[in-house]
Length: 70
Image (cartoon, rainbow, N blue to C red; front, side, top):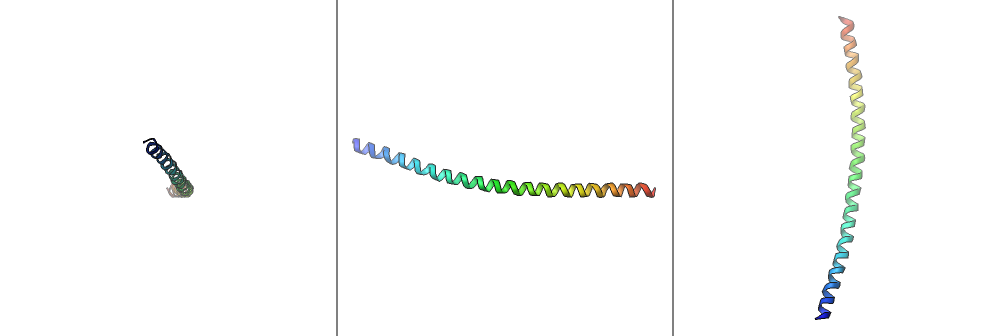
């Protein structure tokens, strides 16, 4: 009986350790994906900010042009 309990306990500990290794690898992959997504979003944000600046400049130019005509 003691051998059976010891075997079950050892199996449980071994399986728990294996599960944590898999969980760690999975979390590391998730972190890499999120970091890549973060850099992509930062690039997209910079691009949109530049586009917004261009549109604001164009808007100001058009306002000046309209005011000059009137």
